[in-house]
Image (tube, rainbow, N blue to C red; front, side, top):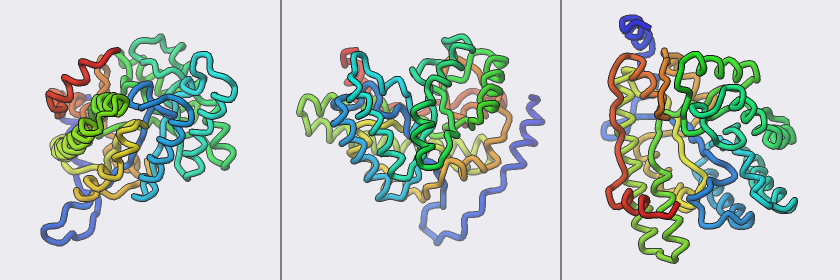
Length: 324
C-alpha cells in the first residue's frame, strides 16, 4: 500500500475515542483488554507443573482478575493438557484448570495445540495444529452455551511471506476465528522465569526484587506504547495487553492492575477493544520477529520499527544464566 493511502487511512481514525472530561491532574481515560497466554500454564515461569499447584496458581490469578473486574481472555495450548506419561487423572486435573477459567466467567481462545510457529511449519501442518488445539476448549465452552471465537499466534509470528499469512488468515475466517492482536507486547516472560526460579530456591527476597522490577518495567512499557500509539495512529487506541499464566502474575497481577488503573486504564472485553477502527489499518507485516500490531502498522507505513523497552540488565543476566 502506498504511503499516501496509508496516511489517509490513519487520518480516518485519528479522532480520539470519546473519553469524557477528566479533571485537571487526572490521567487520561484509556481502554485495554487483558489477554493471558499459554494456558493451563507455560512450560516455565511456574514453580511447579503438578496439577494441584497449577490449580492453586490459577485460583490466585483468577481472584486478582475478579477483584479488578477484568474480563480477560485466556489462550490455550491443549497439548499442555497431555504431559508426557500423564495419567488420565492428570489430564482431567489439567482440564479442570481450564474449567476454572470458564467457571469464573472468562473466555478461552485457541493458541494452537503445540505452540509452534507459523514461520517454521508448512501452512497445512500449522492449520492442522490449530484444529488439534480446539476440541477440549470448544467442549468446555459449549457446556456454558458459548463458542470458541479467538485465535492467538504463538510467538506473535504471522509468517515470513505475505501469501502464506493471507492464506492462513483466510483459513481462520473460514473456521470462524477472529485473530487476537497484541499492541502491548513485552518481555514479561523473562521476569517470570527468574521469579519462579527464585521461589523454587526459596529466595523470597530476590523474588520480591524481581517483582518490583517487573512492575516498574511494565510502567515503562505502557508509557512507550501510549507514545507509540500517538506516533503511529495519531491517538491512543484501545490496547490489547499480552501476559502469561505464571506465578509472577498470579502473585502480582493485583499490583500490576493498580499501576494500569493509575494510568487511567479501564478494562474492556476483547470484542469491545477490537471495535476500535485502528484494527482495520493496513497491515502487510511479515518477518522473523513476532511484534506488536502497533509495530505492524509502523512497518507497513514504511517506517523503521521503534525499539521497545528492555528489562533491566540484572534481570536479563539472571535469565540468561538459567539452565535450559
